Image 1: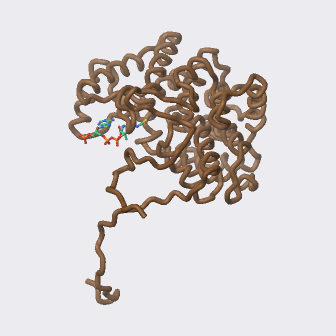
Image 2: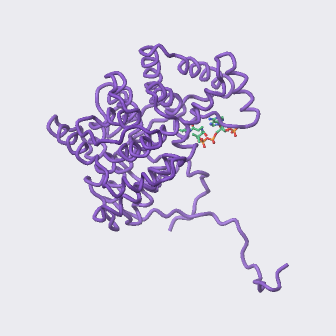
Image 3: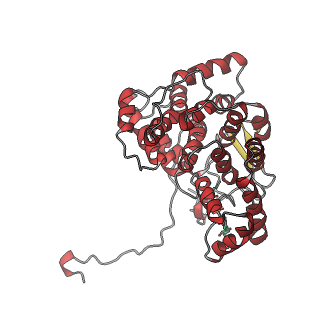
Length: 376
Ligand code: COA
């Protein structure tokens, strides 16, 4: 047996498993899904095509893509008892908590998919189809919008906009969300995907794995950053105040959300693409306030700390321009990443080995046991 190696805090640079799904070149700033560069996918494909690619390892033919579209549309409706339960959840709950609880609850109504060891393409497609419906069911009630309909004819991107802002989006708006979904669909062994794989590696089921992943994505160091970027922009308010606000935060050793990355040593390629979409959408709407603040924030953070933007820096500005509430940003991230989570769980099942690392013990040993009544 190999000797335990030195501790890598946060498992940084530890190679935990082999995967064919996603490759990140942190030095060159490249992101590859199943062999395809993210820049090509973002320019030319759709989220459904990318989900197919992640699940099946190849791009679909036109017929396969059209079948997948119909299937995702057909799998969108929530079971009535789940919709009723969501309606009974407190309206001041964060939508990430609603999503986590609803996916876990959905498993009770789809027991075949939730048996130990259960994992199927159908389950992956069901979860990918249903996450936006869960969000729409909750968000429309808390804001008094008309009840959600399944609208199977809409693409996942158009459906998200319909579900969350209750209007027919323009082509540009739909494409902006579609690109955001493509860019968030997978990212190798990020924390939530690792959590999903750990859960699956115990022979648990796909729905449990996705529940673990949602709980992990929720944290501000992972998926929760985009929401906090918008809070920061509101705090900054105007371009000339940017440097002062950033410096104050850095002096207090606070993190500037939307910057830095565990793997990328250069700009996150997803940030490059979303920056363009933030500008394009801002120009179309005559509303460049966020874009201009973000550009200045990039300049200041690079000057002060040498940090590059990550995917979360610009995504919030794109969603905000569509009128999407800030607390829905991380859930939208989940609605895309679920394609990657489920692809990884399917892969995990093909070559399953319980994921169980080891710890370097730094506690005491051989302490004399003192009975409870004699302890001081
Ligand atoms: N703001 C300020 N300082 C940052 C920073 C940020 N966003 N990201 C990293 N740093 C600093 C750290 O304080 C640390 O400085 P120090 O050596 O002086 O203490 C150094 O850079 C290395 O940071 P470390 O925490 O070791 O890097 P990591 O790989 O663990 O962190 C993140 C990666 C993503 C957790 C980190 O960059 C971060 O917290 N970013 C903000 C949250 C965010 O945008 N998350 C979305 C990721 S896609």
